[in-house]
Length: 474
Ligand code: UDP
Image 1 (cartoon, rainbow, N blue to C red):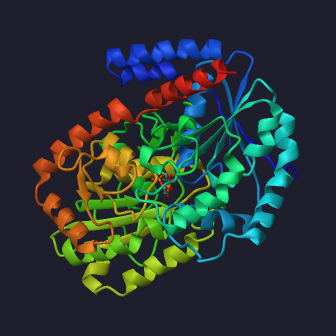
Image 2: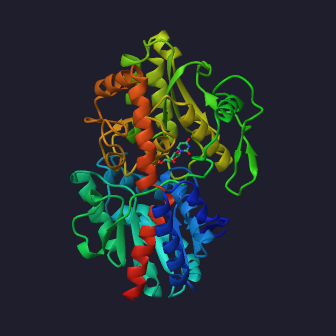
Image 3: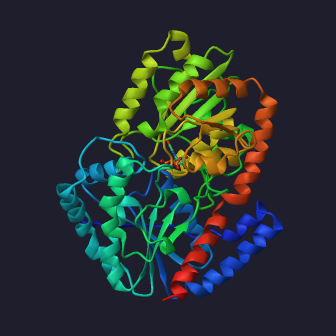
């Protein structure tokens, strides 16, 4: 069985962004496309990570690679494999990098042996693919151990870390110390924000590139109200007509939402409900229980207000072994509420069989929301925040990680100072629910902020700039 799997990505025309950028923004992007064509002639830009679906990194790679290919760059994506034990260790590292203990396990020599053995199994095929003129972008801790193995090919090697913590603590430092020996040979280290850059890495090799979303993907494309309603009805998160449950697939063809989502113990929210929505993986760092309890204590009493907390079907995301447990714990928290609170809180798992369909459901849910929340305890960036903002939704979210770069408090959303304070969260939510005009104003400004900073073109331009410098310096 091959260890390394290629993810086929069809090219998409990057010039489509002319539809949403200002003329100045678009002409800067068009110039970068021209530069990239020359710069990457005869080279492959490899992206390597450990999952083709689920989570923000896979989401971003899919659209950035498609647009890069559409610009004439031979960008490709390969996914490494590992046994559950490998993912248990990398999940522990991921948690530690966020300052969370995760499963509380060690990071020592035994873990090194397992981690290195898993990567070694992937190596022959990867090395077979890479040529000296290529660029290899290795993503996240799962691939860190490949840096030193790939560098001797002569290819330009970038290690990108999508996770981080605002104020380093013992756990995050422990994870850095464990990882640093693996990544030192990289030509550059990319972090999502300056605060995430690790102590102990050479500063001249550190780059900051914020993440981005694709305005035209099934997740973010503009769909009208009737499609929003129909998509939600088709998947069982609303009632009513399903005939317009359609969207544009990544390949441009028409898709139709057909698979149902699972609701646990409730009906779909009423079609006239005011809706609060959080979409995220079932992960303690997304604090679904805090969302449920904060909503129950401060918003559930309000007439006609409902919460949908949605995440992927739990068996679907192979590198996330803690999902099922977190969903169960969220359900237990929900069961502990009063019957009336329970009736206005809906936990949903979304079908993951078809990535475009899943994205269309997320899109519809975010557009249907009156307010989107992201009460994370730690967050590298928080793509869900940009996704909601792009849809003109007001977002209530924790003042942490990259969320702070997206939301200007009171202008493009609302920031909660203490991410663990479910009362502060609940009160902010209730306030905004009572002031739809202010909510609408924030939504409008939020959309502009995403256009100016967090769409694919800005992201690709930063890559062109960085890789241009690295290639020029040999
Ligand atoms: N997501 C999804 N389906 C789900 C749950 C999440 O498509 O059921 C997407 C979500 O829309 C976002 C990504 O997964 O694009 C999560 O990225 P984020 O940066 O918010 O968090 P991460 O999962 O990377 O920690």
